[in-house]
Image (cartoon, rainbow, N blue to C red; front, side, top):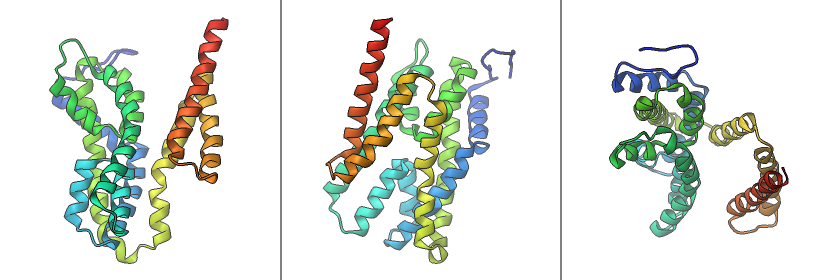
Length: 246
């Protein structure tokens, strides 16, 4: 690998970039978060009667902890297939803005659509946050391979942790499983606070902290969606006002 001070890293091959991404995943704090989260998910899957193979397969296919939690909870309460599908789809919509923000960082002239499909599926909260931080230091021609390696490291960890959690279920108290599941949203929140640099980002964050609990308390349907729409719109309008005033 060739690397100049301040310049993006240039790897010897796409395979080298892939393994560098996987290595970054395994040394990231988010791998600890994933281990805790998926141990909890594996324990819950065991409790509702799902198989360990189902747990591992759903991690690879769905690759979204909250969506898997929805599926497990719905199965445990006897929810219908259509209800589960709608709930998982609505849950997955939160990842769309992340994909839209991330793909332009990976795309280069001549990039074909099939090359972008795997990173699109691989996009998760952990991968998105780390990619935004690390990709500027990776040469553009190796960013897709690097991201695929990053997510493969995270996904492999999640699969193993879910399998371990499945067989630890008998000795894992429900309260501890719930605490472990809370690690992912907590880590995302702390990363968002840490990365909020612009005023409008801080406004949106504060509005979300205020509106979310209020709408939930008032039992407003789709409270999370409305929190994002209202808070984001106000922050965006304020940003437009500041640019026009200056």
